[in-house]
Amino acid sequence: MASAAFEEIAEDFEFLDEWEARYGHVIDLGKAMPPLEDAFKVPSTKVDGCASQVWLQPAIAGGIFHFRGDSDAMIVRGLIAVLVALYDGLTLDEVARVDASAEFTRLGLNDHLSAQRSNGLRAMVERIGKLAAEA
Picture (tube, rainbow, N blue to C red):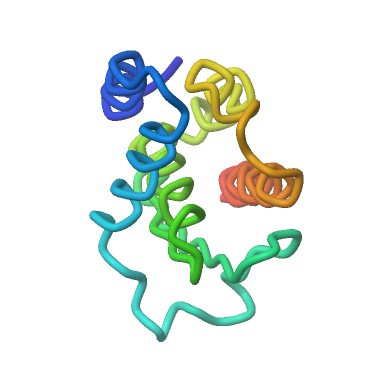
């Protein structure tokens, strides 16, 4: 159940044979993402469990989940961009049904992230699920 934006990323990854190229693409996605304003980089939006600084800012309107995020690490900004593609614009019920681990496995990211990055990604996914469930 992936969004069209996430499917586009998955298609891009199919053309990138080597992990270094995929890693670079993730970084490029992060660079293209607009930064989160400093006013939203506060303790309430900070994600615990990440080695780098990570902030996720939700905006839920009419039962539709939107969020923006930022990080001080470029690869993590890229992972946030992938998460935005995966979740942004879904209904709250759809957010709960997303199997983020399976979707990241499709991209081959689970096999190439460090343990710290994997833990951080898991923390971000858990935070997104919690935000949607609390809405």
